[in-house]
Length: 459
Image (tube, rainbow, N blue to C red):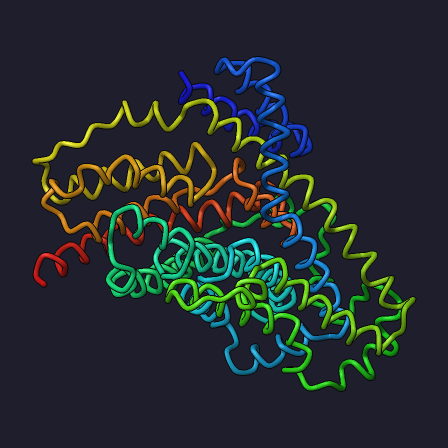
């Protein structure tokens, strides 16, 4: 019954938001209450999971969201994104979505997905008109989505990739050897397919953007966050070389990646661990951006820029936290045990059947629980005890789990709401971009895993 009630709660929340225009926070809380009471958690248990899930998500991503949004506001005030977009548009042009998807999948998988979307979203909004006046933002949104999660599950040291490899006892080097080409190919092919979909009347500007979103202003680098932005910022701050103005992003990325790589290599130390922590790294980036803007427009001007960022941060934090509440209630309902009893793995099954079953288990778990990493880890926990008797290389089963775990990221994920608010998309628009792109990516990567099984068998 947990599966049925979870489906009712999720579909009910989607219906309330899209059909009846109920605010996402209210819709998600109603889904939490229904699911908790329907699955026997009781009034006290339901409240505990709602508040506990909210708190856990805030502990994990609260500071990341706040620091990241403020960095974005300050960089925008300096004209950093508009200058970067101008260069990219000149050198890459309409291929920017492919460049973004490939880069996120292969270069930045060590960065938390929450950090990636916070840092990449402002660039996507700025560059959208240069890519395609009508479909630029949804295309870049889809490219961001698949780039982030293809790297997250396939490319070491992505968190989900490392977790899956560890549970399946696959050496990280072997996992990377197969996962890197699969992740990159998945990101690029999915970006191409998503563009074809957009060209067939898939996107509706009237309903797929947030009600308050001004598409014309999104690509306008001169759209002021504060009045002071048109004065001193356009002068002294913009006079700084672009690479200097990008330091608030580059420094955190280098620190986080260095910490992650050192951890994998067993060469970490307390200083590197401290500086490589995503919260500390982003705070240092925020401090650099603050000092740049402060010297350009003074205390009052930088206060106005930060004030705008704080307003955005509050909205994102609330809806993200409630998304975490729904995930906590679903997890507490016993979904993983129910699915484990529903699926039984035949040890003598053909290779294709074993791969498909591993993919399906991970896909269903992710769809129900709302976390790519938790879905992947739970699936690996179910399958790992018998993987040695399947007659399939463990790395292939691990890759199948990674592929399935991307499937259909939707409203029960806190990332969904971060993505939606940061890109000014409606719930329907996020379903059309994030959910569709990750679903396409899961399907695109599956045949690549089958190819990997042939290669692994031949080695």
